[in-house]
Length: 397
Length: 199
Image (cartoon, rainbow over all chains, first blue to last red; front, side):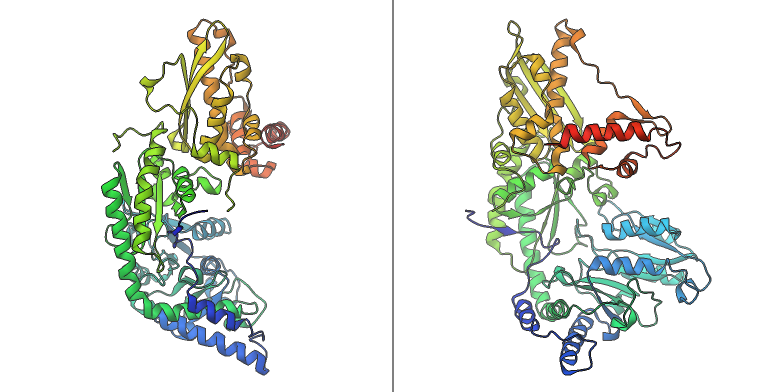
């Protein structure tokens, strides 16, 4: 049996907060359909609306601006698809033409893949690049944007590097050109303060399981007055913006998570950042020929992305797994394709560096002992992989 | 706890056999190198040959590769010791996969490097020892004239998961102009599927 397990993959998903778990177990008894008029339905409605208030409080919106959905991916798909609508009755296509969308090369696949798809449907899409830290190039974006732009969609924080984008400035540029602004804030909400009014965005995506809530539930902030067109039709739920009987248990869980994080996030951030920095310093001291990826300051407090020269990422990952350490690779080899991370490539890293990168992402449950444990195992693992590597040229340590 | 791979893969991954740590430590007669860093995997195989018996007396290897590349080459390196060059030449990735008690389907493409590197080393030996006529020419043939797609690329697409003509088209763009190569490409695709994936 494993002596110890250390979970450092909180950007992939987070463990459920104990209070969320408790609330969700209680919510399992609320089986009424929130659309029903009887007492069972009203009880479900009440708990869903309470969750809506918790979420809107947490991101600085009003409750009627929050639409619950099945995931962050669904929310992102929905926003981009609004701009493909050609219905006569729809405000989006009032002039009968699809306006173009600008997004970036470092977005999550659910935005990139949807963009490819809507391009095929006839909506033009442009991609803005990033600097060496993975920060979306605002200058390039201001040159790219025009009166034909309908939507600018840029993520708030990158899942692989943790780099935080200048959403406030990008939103201002979008609005100055008559476009709407969407940000995929799935990695930001619960990790750093997010305020929709301060950011000035029209749409913002969030997800339950990235903030210590359940999987299978997420949502979208839609600014009052912003155009909208549903992707899922056939019900009046969520103001007719997302049909389907509400996932009461999931929504209640996500609401509780937002409530808990509102109180706990400031202290969590401090602790998580200290742990991340300790790991970073420790790796710097004990392993040679490495490169940290992502912005040195504008970065999520718990994300550390590091490339180990001459090492293939999946081997590192699996050797760590055998020691009970869970992290993630920038390379997609483990998921079946040999393509290196599109994010690291967009930052200008060579494929060989991108293939050897590992992402550690901290959460509220991590401890200093976790970091010590990783630092006790990692140098040996790297040495081992480098010993058999055809690609390691450094001297080692 | 369940692991992605079999116990045998785990064993070879944890304790890879016959790794070459330093080139000077091993006197080899030939070296074969395949793959490249761009694709994210690279393999080098070194053989020592007994010229009288025509067998591989010893071997070493190195890789920049993932767990299944490491495990498959490790087991290959055990298998080929004492083997005749001609027999070692015939080892297929499927033989290796079988010995490892299987690999997840999407990892098969990582396991083909070891035997490729071994063949390259044997070819190198033949060439440097006046037996060039034994070198197998594995030249890629163009199947789709319009898009310039070769049989090698079709094999690669199959290893990357293509199982239907449409998937093959999406990966290689073959047959997207005149479409004349469809039958030939489908036939090749099915051949590669059975070579690499049928148990």
